Amino acid sequence: MSAAQKEKKMKEAQDLYAKGVKAAKTSLTKWKADYDSASNYFENAARGFRGVGFDEQAIEAYEKAAFCYEKCDSMFSAGRALEAACTIASQMGQPFKEKATVMYRKAAHYFKAYGAADKAVEMFTKAAKLREDADPEGTIKMYEEAIETTIHDDRQIFVSDIFRPYVGFLVKTERYPAALKALKHQIDILKSIEGQRDNMHKAFLSQVIINLILNDSVGAENTIQDAMQIEGFTRTTEYTAGSDLIDAFNQGDAAELKKALDKPVFGFLDNNLSRLAKRISVPTLPSAPAGAAASLFKPKTAPSSVPSLAPRSVTPPPAGQEPAAGTYDDHQHEHEEEAKAEESTTDTYDFLA
Image 1 (cartoon, helix red, strand yellow):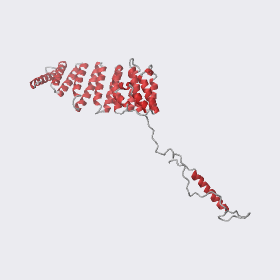
Image 2 (image 1 turned 45 degrees about the vertical axis):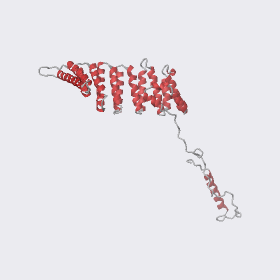
Image 3 (image 1 turned 30 degrees about the vertical axis):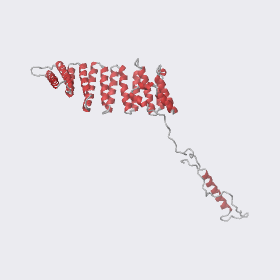
Image 4 (image 1 turned 120 degrees about the vertical axis):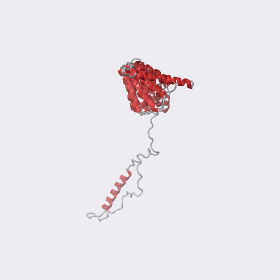
């Protein structure tokens, strides 16, 4: 497009925008705003601005179009106008990405009001993905709002489309307990929906992976036990992979663990869960220092200076005569005390060696 053509398109877009502003206003001779005409003017102006690269002006025009559509009670068109604005803003810098998350949420409510729950969920999910790096907690709230929308509007069939990126985000940010809780919530919902067994089986396998990352083999085993209550689960590749994974983990067999992780079924999970599975390793016990086992109950070496316990050659006193100090009885008492000391010394064990 030449400079002259671009200038002409820009002028047309500005004229359409001005007509929209005028149509949306009231005056002394015009008591009621013409929001129907204004919405068309603003939307056409937005397309014109977008065509010549004036993205900020396009976003503003789409926002005004959405406002006018809302005034006309045309909620679906309002949602579509804001969605178009979000598409532009999400491709721009961070301030515009933040603005896009706000507009996506508003668009979701427009679609909900119209009854298009699937579009509302799509808007919440897109908003959540835009927030992931800058606002993790806001991301979680967006996903949870999307889940509530599917439940409230009886559109649970779309629930796996939300849980997949939601659990992936929780795993990516290492919020493992929250991920396990989300997967349980997903499974509880899917149990009541026909034709969702495949997604349920994948959710069970995902729980096994997270439990083993947390070194909780009991939790992983309980997951498989719960899953076995679902008809047909024991005939699935998820059951085989999960069971093999747990067996290898409990046996500390690294080769079998690798063999289990090489099963194709792991490639059908969310990318974050597939990568997490590759991080599972067999548990290792802390090794004792060299020689520690041999010295655990090693008796202390008896001191070399322990007196001999051989009886002393001491002549007892004559009958009826008291022994003099330092004679037989004194020496006999000394001998007994030394024997006790020797016994205590040789029987002492060093439990801290």
